Image (cartoon, rainbow, N blue to C red):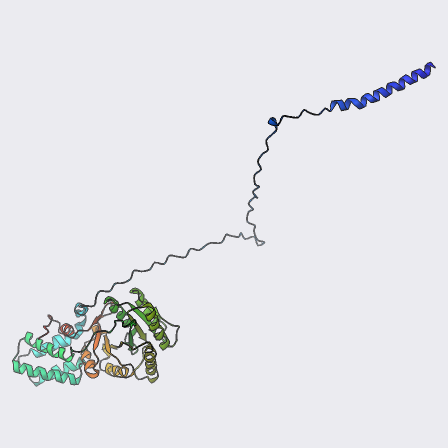
Length: 398
């Protein structure tokens, strides 16, 4: 009985120890007291995540890729426009350029006329001098006959008096009554149209550019038409001349129809309201029928806009009497209204002015006396003769 009691007590003890082992750990894990809200940790503001910059990758070849270079276009400086001086009195300022012609008209003729005795041999020498200067046979005979008569009647012997007589006869031979003005004024909303023609080698395109400067100097606004489409550099050359004075140039592709370019130039001139349209044509020989017919076509096409106001023929003074045949053929094709005589500074044959006018009845309106850009002057007979004789200006009633 006692043994059972002991066993029961032992079992009861083991049971109690087991219960204690289960309860004690739970009592140790007590929950932490909750913090008051005032002490709660603040939330850290989130910042955007910036992705790291990746270094430029190298291509498989191992060559580093350079960033593209942005090219800045160069600044093109526009050159200032030229302002040509007014043409009034330009011939007087350029009189020294006629020095070679002065040897014939000035020193030569005045030396012959001032001899103590003017016999037949002296008068023949005077005739030869005038013919050599390209005055022409018919004009020379008339001038010499009038000089002989006046010197005989007046009995003049001094150099001053003889010079006055010679000057009067030369001015008379140049016919000062001819109208030498350039018709370049617009009319009824239409610009004046000036057609420039001539043979090869006369300096036509250069002279055309100088004519543009003459018009601008006299207050005209100008548009250029580059109808010389056969010579590759002609349009570029003309455009350069126009650009110096602010004149627009209308041009076509190389070998384009000249009549079409001329037509477009006048159309553009009407649209822009310029005063004068100046059309440069290709140089041509007067004996080439096909080329002359083409020039006639240019004239007819341009006249669809209206009549041509001026047709200027460029003549090289050094060609002498050959220039007369050139002028005659061009006159028949395009009705030349005026002559521009170039290269007078390099020739002793200034008498071609007289020959052209007497033979064709066409006035010389401009003369070229040098290679400078403003060496083209309006022609005035009295000033021209004064420059040829090389002394003091003449009185108009000499």
